[in-house]
Length: 349
Ligand SMILES: NC(=O)c1ccc[n+]([C@@H]2O[C@H](COP(=O)([O-])OP(=O)(O)OC[C@H]3O[C@@H](n4cnc5c(N)ncnc54)[C@H](O)[C@@H]3O)[C@@H](O)[C@H]2O)c1
Image (cartoon, helix red, strand yellow):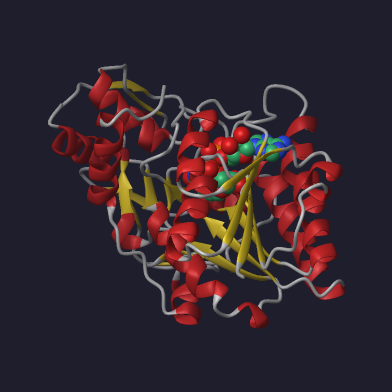
């Protein structure tokens, strides 16, 4: 019987992957482990139960919580994290490191002990802040775009590829993800754990409990519905900053394709995102939100940029596309429509 364990399985991405996997293979065993520290994650427990996903209340910082789960798993998806890019910046990063790095090591240990394949949900935040900030950009009407001409290694008109610099500071969050990636490589090389790393850009869609420091695109749409305040922050307050959005259904489709080739996994890294067709500036996203919700809103402007923010990030997904024959199919408008439907049906607290 196919079996899957998702850590962080009550979170936005984890719950989505767990439920989608159970739907795709109703006879399989799917377990979601979570300590429910993310506000809103407790609201997913009913959905998980209704979808036939077993829930285990546990903490990845505690090795014995993982060891106590009975049974073997064909695949473990590591989706438990403090996913905030600002985590650790206001004080000690100890708790972030315990969850994001030590938690990954504990989960890798479980994979080693049970002979499971392993997927790390890493982040585009592993890339060098300085190198991303040095990208040559031009300010177009509604967004920044890469300037024509020479680009640094790893960057092209398609966006940022896996070869882009990871040197220098990036954020404590990005550092925990990069360190986790290195540990995945070691487990693959020395313990034979079949593993892949998916370096995700922005994932957005229904089920996300968006906050200003994480999930801002989902929060932005929610604010269109509830009338809460909106402000373009940083980069002269213009809203021209660009990200590529990935729908969680597209991530699941990639996971399915990857799962079909587990025997070839040896720690490879893939940039995973919405790519050029999923790229949108915050200013353009405001327009998409207005159209999807029917609620246009005024947006204030705060020019000062946050120390770990960047003006432009678009994932170049060529490597994953070539390897798995995968392509993200759901663009910003579908993400906005699906989010609107979910929020109108009750959404988060
Ligand atoms: N959403 C994105 O845009 C995005 C982008 C890149 C990478 N990722 C990565 O994808 C993964 C899932 O992110 P998400 O957006 O679903 O975040 P999320 O906060 O919705 O989900 C994370 C879940 O992990 C749980 N968790 C936190 N600490 C835990 C611990 N010590 N033990 C057990 N559970 C714990 C939380 O309660 C939460 O339910 C994370 O690893 C994140 O870094 C997300």
